Each structure stands twice: as structure tokens, then as C-alpha cells.
Image (cartoon, rainbow, N blue to C red; front, side):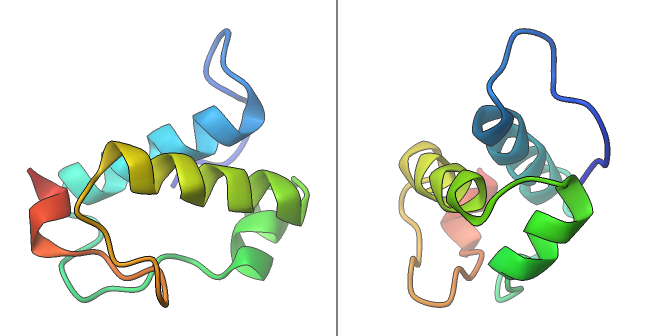
Amino acid sequence: MRNGNNRSGMKRYESLAADMADSIRAGVLHPGDRLPSVRQARASRGVSSSTVFQAYYLLAQQLDPWSAVGRIVTAAARR
């Protein structure tokens, strides 16, 4: 995931979700990998826990099917 500023014109949670999706599609995160914890994502991006939860919710919608329990990357999410 990228540190720093939002993507132009995106809300913070949208930018975070887009960065996570990019990491999955690029193979940085592999099937079976856990996404960063809310605390880790919050600290690395300087955002609130609520922003991270919104990003994970948006990511789940974008990369269906998705394992929300434990926020684990599934093989189908990489497509």
C-alpha cells in the first residue's frame, strides 16, 4: 500500500481501498494473505479506524467474492 496523499479527487477511504485493490491485483498480496489490521492501516495512512473500516467495506464490494472474516485475500479477488 502506498503511504501519503490520497489519489486526486478521492475520499480517504476510496484511496485506501484502491491502493489495497492494486496490491492484490499486482500480486503484492497473495491468496491466503491477511490484509493489514485496522491499527496497522490506520497508523500507516494516518487515518481513523472508521476510514479503514469504510475502505475494507468498499474493497469487499469491489472484489467479490471476499472473505470478510479475518479480511483474507481470496484467489477470486485477484481477477
